[in-house]
Length: 412
Ligand SMILES: [Ca+2]
Ligand SMILES: [Ca+2]
Image (cartoon, rainbow, N blue to C red; front, top):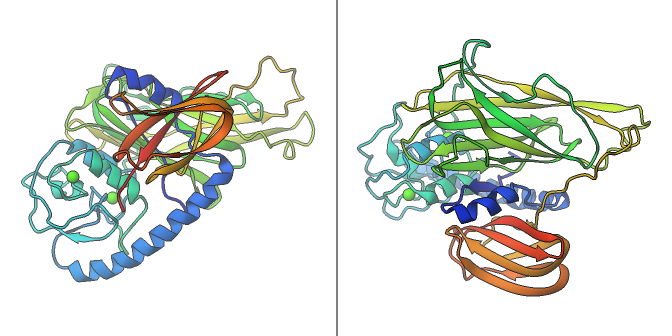
């Protein structure tokens, strides 16, 4: 548990907020900033885990909830989003004195509704306010990676190739030739047997990759059939280290019992190749071969049953920039960097080009903050007067508008 997730996406409610969100993708931090973020959250998690052991001992013997652990298996992670999403909009008994924080809390009254896997809906109400809503999705994000001393691992259904549905890359069998610093987009498809598409209520998976070669991997869903009606929530963690590789966790869930049927693109992985690979590519003839793998997939159908899924990987070949004459300039994402994100108030904004104006829009597309600048590349921005929630920052420069999502959270 080296890192807490630091990114989250939700499709905008209004069409006007969709484009900035999509354009922003998920590149939140410059790479050098991430370790600080890691240590900050590692300290938080250690503190939270200690607290958990104490409080768990007190509550043992009655129904108890670790907020964000909606599937009640003892760990808060990307799989929990599918439970919270399925129960979205449900109401039940309030937990008095509840918080959405990472402490085990008693459940005095279970809810009338139960998930098909037997878990009570009370576990989806992370903050205990009696309704499953946006704040409960946010609790999974805030408590990410926190776990009890005993975790019941979720059994993921591995599919049979040629028989079951497949979550894979569009170009799974082909190799790319790309250059350090390039950005490429890899469509991820959920494919079923011909004429047999299933209704899907939620999809969760991990992408595993070698972080020596990839600076960022970010999920976008602008062409996804699961999110095209804005009835879905999309979640991604920042990449974190697991042994020798890096992993990023992704979940896409419908809001409530509202499955959609479709086939083809469910997400797109935007990848930036490290531009500091020349030391690894000694001569222009050298290439690096590496793989990005889809793993640990959970797909929930319309009845919240698990669909067996065949997984996939893609081979990527990175070639020395002098091996071929470049045909084009590398594409850079039109991104602002925001740190820290989520924030309780004050953020640092930096831009690849001199900033002329900063504007902040809320989830309904309303302008909530605005500042004129005179060509600075970065500045501090105080946002503590704004309520918790998701915002999109627009930075106007002479080269165009740069975007980034900002999450403001006043939770402890
Ligand atoms: Ca869980
Ligand atoms: Ca709630």
